[in-house]
Length: 482
Ligand SMILES: *Cc1c(COP(=O)(O)O)cnc(C)c1O
Image (cartoon, rainbow, N blue to C red; front, side, top):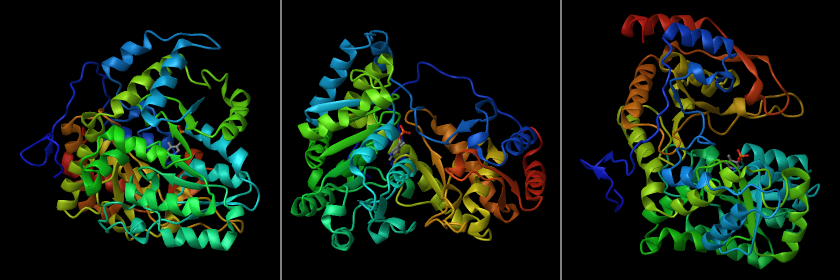
């Protein structure tokens, strides 16, 4: 275990906060959940929150705020231009990241839009440890492509490499060779690599990436949306960082980056986003897009209240008490499931617990969306909403064929400081039951399939009446009221 004090009995994580505002939850019974899932076309994105017990869809915009954040929101200075709130946020950004310029944006993908419009040209390539849905979409829309150059261990769900988000330096050199450095728009490094299970990169790896980029005059763009988790893992797993404070690690990561962008729906527990950088020419060119797509330079589409919350939230992110809570709870959940043989992504990452659907429901072919089917089944038997991250989240190729995903994951996100340990235990208990009854889960097929980002709005039907059988078995074991 890491050298942090927040455990008792060795492995039970201890919250370093208390709950002062609560929201009542609904607990629909299994028949109501079956109806809701059918009405939602077996797509968890289309469920209504009122029909959900534990919402583990995402950590985006739903992290619990602190009393200090709420207090700061009351003092926001509303003005179209030149607000005091922006000055406060700008100061915090400079203090933490040490970059000269900060540009606000309404959320993370807005930064991706602006960066891609400026830097990505037709035929260019963006080498990256791994893609994120929105970042890839913006690069492709501007005529570029992404080259995924993650270390091989990163896609092996059973490999316990501590830094599965690392870039393979040899693969990076190969991409630069193949395309020529002039065709490399920038190198994108994603903190807490989202789609492979919230897995971190190491500081040592980032230093190596910097060396290569320096040799070819390439920019490093850091997607810092999940930086908080990555900081925790660097601090606890990377020996050379043992003596460094979170603030020092952050500063070095920032110094190694040319441009940093982030979603404040994750980083800083607020809602919004932004970019920071040192280069005055790049700044001047990026700045032009902000009034066009976001808003004036001193709010960029964010409400001033959220900006105040973000300023405090970023400060709080420099505190181990704060950034350890997510990884500790996720680690606990992964350990409980793993000890019972339930296939999960290891080691536990940030962001959430990821069930490996390829193993969990290995009788379902990828063309019948095993992770999507598992998401539907888990909701029906528990009221827990997760997110499919597999073939369903991919797009068909030009010939209309399925693009089979590298991994079929059901992500159960743990928004920071939101759930109690008994709620985690409830989720584990239902997952355990579902695993014991996994043969009852069947596949899905599209009934409405949008061309772009189909996982958001698409509707699906079951390939057999497996959900009725699953519910019948559930009622036999738990009764109708659960
Ligand atoms: C969420 C996320 C984004 C997009 O941010 P939004 O605020 O949702 O637009 C980009 N990159 C990563 C790694 C993310 O997790």
